[in-house]
Length: 107
Image (cartoon, rainbow, N blue to C red; front, side, top):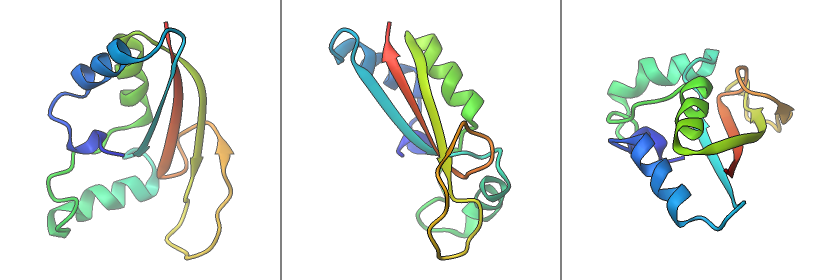
């Protein structure tokens, strides 16, 4: 979940691809800024010591970076739909849960 602190996400993903074994997998977990909670994180980041320098991405951004870097998307999952301190369902796809994961395979 460091993508939001990278200066050049595409360059980093290309480097991961370069060093990854043929047909290897790359798992990216991130805060999806396009979700309802992601928008709250983005609005509050200026006053948050940890996230004040973060540049959150959407699932579309991450998928585009992965594809441009030479990966095929294999799976997408998501969770955390509210700030309630309880176990929250893991669902397929991205776009609802603020904590998103994309599994990609090296082409």
